[in-house]
Length: 523
Ligand SMILES: *[C@@H]1O[C@H](CO)[C@@H](O)[C@H](O)[C@H]1NC(C)=O
Ligand SMILES: *[C@@H]1O[C@H](CO)[C@@H](O)[C@H](O)[C@H]1NC(C)=O
Ligand SMILES: *[C@@H]1O[C@H](CO)[C@@H](O)[C@H](O)[C@H]1NC(C)=O
Ligand SMILES: *[C@@H]1O[C@H](CO)[C@@H](O)[C@H](O)[C@H]1NC(C)=O
Ligand SMILES: *[C@@H]1O[C@H](CO)[C@@H](O)[C@H](O)[C@H]1NC(C)=O
Ligand SMILES: [Zn+2]
Image (cartoon, rainbow, N blue to C red; front, side, top):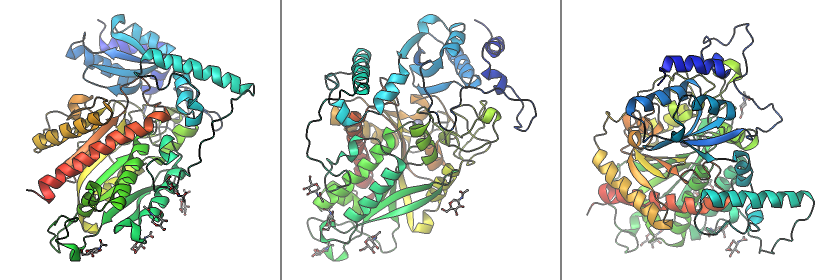
């Protein structure tokens, strides 16, 4: 086996990007810096014809070898999609692949997504168009079925180009912003930030306590802060205020409330990584489901929970990265902050930038995992951390914090930075986490696993749940990796939004009930 130093020298000859990686830190040098990779100009949209996603199997490798691989990945600024105990998924262009072939045993490699560009196109297909693809509901999803699906889609697109579209079936039009039903087509599509925020406004107009039909729900918009590109990060926060005259009413279980007892808050965020589109969609679905159930039935679990907790959902914590992923570069993960990086590289990986045991990364600003020059350098992590740490000023205490990502089908508790840092509440966190995973599995039969973040993925400092647990003392801190396990990866087709959202909604409901039973209303 080659030594890591020799390998990296070799790599630096083979791939121009490493020249940038090993350059000096200041961005003001007069030497023209080589573009590390193809950057889309303002008008063009990045394409991925030359890219494939590979799965590298850890099992034939010992610990040292695995560490070498991770070092190479970091030094080459490779785009890691997912890491688990068994494997790592990496996006590679043909040049990068050639280099890794020289370094890794060939049998450790499996091409996982062969036709990335088509998958990108597939994930942006509207649900109506989908109806013409004969295979998309046919049972199990396999590599083969996806490829067949892509083939059909491309065939259809070509036909469409020739102006031979089939007539659409006449469906009764349902207004996507009619939120009196969970069947609203809003949940069958990925949405722009603007549409998400319109959804939030509509939640208020539909569910806020101005009508007789809303069971005393109060919902308001919360302003978390601004992004680097000056977009507003918004959240929606809901609560049913205690009906003090209603005590004894069988529909309203008596939750003894102290006048000065602090309000408990349950916070859900999503979208730290721009390309992980199903997180934000699921967060909105969860809040919608909660409010709808509570308004329909004051005895529902949702209503009981809303009387005990304030639920705050921030569906899109990284609006700049998300919009960039929608408009320019589907694989964009970070925010869009100028960090003085070489080669015009922009962006901080938000989930490496939180201020608990933060460490600077070996990688450069060109890396998808760039942690920033210091903790909370990113506008977005800073704003959200201020929201979490100012709970006392709002008269409440954040009791739960759940951070939604994709993909991997995992539900994880702290810590992520190291398995040696063991949370005092680990046993309870594991017990609740196992229940959540089971609730999620039960919903649609999709497997979810629970465990400690450092264990289930690769150890990573600067994680949001490490901060929420380690610094702001939020006992029930979790991060979730939603669907899938890699077949579509980040390019989940719209038809899978609803099942994914339905699963995590069941999981979050389970978690809230668990905390309720343990801490709010113990037997
Ligand atoms: C909203 O949808 C529900 C259920 O489909 C329907 O009964 C209701 O009339 C719709 N409301 C509006 C304003 O369209
Ligand atoms: C409650 O009633 C108002 C006014 O009629 C309506 O706009 C709103 O959609 C209703 N909300 C629900 C949850 O049914
Ligand atoms: C929501 O309802 C409450 C109580 O009726 C009211 O005070 C508040 O202004 C309403 N908020 C919005 C955004 O309409
Ligand atoms: C950001 O938006 C605010 C108003 O929302 C505006 O006053 C300010 O000039 C904007 N800043 C930039 C850099 O665009
Ligand atoms: C509060 O409780 C009283 C007594 O049970 C009941 O009549 C009233 O409708 C309740 N109000 C709300 C907003 O639920
Ligand atoms: Zn993520």
